[in-house]
Every structure is written in C-alpha cells, then in structure tokens.
Amino acid sequence: MRNRIREQRTQRGLSQAELGSALGVSRQTVISLENGRYLPSLPLAFRIARFFDMPVDKVFDPDDAESE
Amino acid sequence: MMLTFIPARMRIPTYVGAGGILLGTAFFVRGGRLWWVGILALVSAAAQVYGAYRRGGEDSDEGALAGSRADERQKYISVRSHALAGNVAMIAAFLGMVAGIAANAIWWWPFGVMLGIVGLAYLFGLSNYGTSDSD
Image 1 (tube, chains in turn green, purple):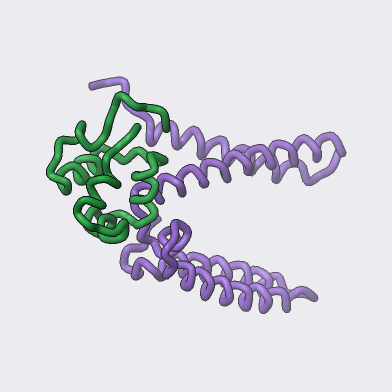
Image 2 (spheres, helix red, strand yellow):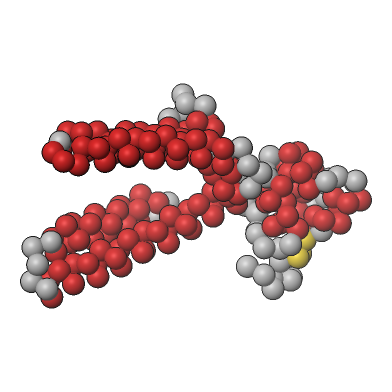
C-alpha cells in the first residue's frame, strides 16, 4: 500500500526522527512506513493522518496493495 | 511479565542478570568438581547484563527492544521472532524425542516434556488470544 508520508514530511521540513518523535514511534518505523514495508495499526494511521491534517485515505492509498 | 517498577532500560538486563544468578546458583548448589562453572556463569551473566544495557541505548530495533521502549512495529518484530523461536523449539524437541526413542536411550523423555510444554503453550495462546464466538 502506497502512502504519502515521505512527501508530507519533506514538505514540512521534518526529519524522520522528528516525525517519529511527534508520532511516538522510532525513526526506523518511520523509514519502514515511508518505504511501504510496514502497514501501521489503525490508531497509528489515524495519528499520522491527524498530524498531517489529512484524511486517512489521502495519506494511504488502499488501491495500491503491492506490498504487505 | 512486565516488572514496571524497574526502569525500562534496566528490565532486560535485570532478566538476564536474574537468569545468570539462577544458573550460577544451580552449579553452587550442585557442588562437586564443577562448582567453578558457577563463577563462570556469574561472570558471563555480568558481561551480558552490561551488553544488554549498552544495546538498550542504541538507535536500532534491537536497541529499542533491549531498552524496553519498542514501538508497535518493533513489538510486532519481537512477536514474530518469538513465534519463530517457538517453532524451532518445537521441531528440535520433536527431533530429539524421535532420536532418543530410535536410539533406545533413556534421555528421550525430557524432549517429550519440552514438546508437551511448547504444545500446551501454543494451545493456551490460541484460547487466550483467540476471538470468542459470542457477541
């Protein structure tokens, strides 16, 4: 499933560590999320969407399910 | 079991240290010629406690797990690793039991006990974490 986390993060000039700190997850988890290697739990997905002030389905693209 | 009164970074080192003390004590209680192995076990445990504490400060998945500050993905990794370890333990116990029986050896039954414990733990997990049929 593709997502726009990297795009939104870089637009805001945040590092992966800063975003991780804001979301309460590690830098490694932000990297995995951005690369689509890890699908977040529903609460984390909502935290990410709220942080970027976007609907969940705008951050995550459910139509592209090429990764796990 | 989470000992929350222990600071997060000290939890894994505490478990490691407690295991080392138990193992060392077992050799001392056993006595005989191998009492000195108890000292080796304690020294080794001290080194592993130090190693676990250092690892707990690293900026990595292993560091987060060792420091008891894992996020959801890191906990998921840990769960999968535990599942792998459980599968390997079950296969090893089964192979050990089969080998013991085939060799007509007396040491087959500890493998059988281990196999039984791992199997029961799996069934307990299914009943504990599984979903209920009712609403």
